[in-house]
Amino acid sequence: MAVRDDRSDVKQTTTGFRDPLKVQSLTSAKSKFLSLGDLPARSGLGSSSSFSVGLINAVNALEGAYKSPLELAKSAIYIEQELIKECVGSQDQIAAAYGGFNEIEFYNDGKFSVTPKIIKQSRREDLNNHLMLFYTGVSRFSSEISRSLVNNMKNCSSQMKELYDMAGEGSSILSNDNIPLDEFGFLMNKAWQNKRTLSSKVSNKKIEEMYNSAIKAGALGGKILGAGGGGFILFFVKPQDQKRVKNVLKNFTHVPFTFENTGSQVIVSQPNVF
Image (cartoon, rainbow, N blue to C red; front, side):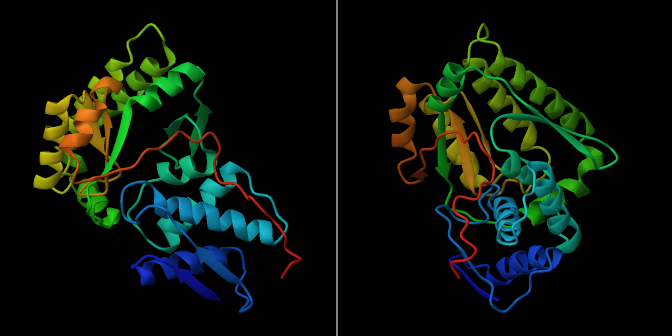
């Protein structure tokens, strides 16, 4: 199998290619895969899980098989956690497979449920217009930070319970037009103040300086995405204050984005061409 990838973590990426192929029993030397990405790897955006889900989807399409979002998510979770032995969660794989806004419930037996979240289009657009994404310029291996979180979990039961409750509160804010959307921004700030206490590796001087600068410029809240330690920071900022926030963070890359309603998709399938 020939593999080409534009990321520097070639060894890890190659493993990420091989394991889904082993699961699918596709090891032919004639198989070639090209992976392209618009954003940096190891940045907290779930790119590794999106890669796993996308590759599994593509391999199945190549063999003329269809996999449901549930099957894609389960396969990706198995590969990352059981085959590659990464210290990662399960939410990114599910998000990549299903797409859109969902409430994901995890159970003690390893199972999970996914419930689509009904949010008015106007509310979704309003939320999208209040969010700003910035790259810290720091990439990191999330598994290392996640391992520190797991090792410290016994000391963080109260914080974890609070974060769990915040997920429900955030869901309620988004689905209720009578609640000012600004409350979601304040909740993001509260969640970040909680998350940064879970491990000394979640935040650092650079992240703290970025966050505090944005808050002083008008952001109502924000959080580091993924495990922490670097990658991207998402801020909640009123549209009228965004120019000021962008100015104070001018040394960092601002990445505009819009919400995606669908998960992993096979865009073109022409197996007979080759």
